[in-house]
Length: 460
Image (cartoon, rainbow, N blue to C red):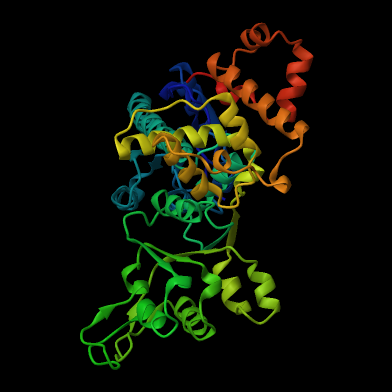
């Protein structure tokens, strides 16, 4: 476990962050804590370094650690080393005797904030602590800002207010911070590559390349050369050296779309490359080391393919360290108005046409469609709408099996009306009640049924 920053959204105050004082001598703890508390600082005392480390690993808020070096079990230097391994380590100030000064100096060279030599002036310690607290407050505030920007940017990349999309964004935000391989499951046109790019762009390998290969679009004879590369003359037609996609994506992300189409012979070689972390180009003996994340996407159930012998089980478990499921558009119909308007904006910009506002009737029709082509189909409809062309269901009636029941249409319309009212009033429930002339209990029930939360509409 790693230390978690405070979740407060308000600007952090250095004085509000507690000073953690660790010393095995009770008299020293008492005298130092009293001095710091009289100076207006919040102090928490510990008798053992191990307790400090446990509290930090559990995410308890800490501004600065002030630790004696000489302690039983875990000394101050060992504590400093352990604290440095945390994701967001607090500054560490060491209290040292005369004979420990060289060790304290070495610790500062390795990242410790400062050291205070015994006997010391309490005012010197206070000054040192306050500077460390200011640094800590600024570091946590910057971290919170980065997290907020990342979350907001994800909201613009993976559009949708439905519960399914909110869950997907949380999962992407969590997985992006790791280098684990991921399998993305979703229907054609549901946005698998968009999710893969989000994993890359928000991840630790974002400075590396994002390299995409559609396995279903490649000739089976050429796919190994595409993945591993080849030297000049490695086979007939290899007129020059080619760097493979695995090598190109090293220190970045390799996105393998339609992984279910990868030939079994290539699956064996891909598995070996991922297991060993190295490859050799065709026609070469030079070993090339890899450091990359693989994100694979499939519209098929890979485990079913494994059971049928069409996909290697060992490769599946190597790739599917984590799995993400992208919901089809028909399972998040409440997102359709937002997505349609977004695609309309894009089409108006690309084709230099005036923006058109969809009518309620059109939004209702969009909500009733089955969307076999998912987002790709919705984008197509939005482009047609902006260009003033006939929409498919305007030129031919919707097949009977695609027509939704009246109750489903009414539910979709009701969800849209509620969401738009909440957006207009920035989550002000009383204003929504007045506009829609609803009792509070009725509105609560409808918001629960449509998975609408007031917090999602508050002005920021």
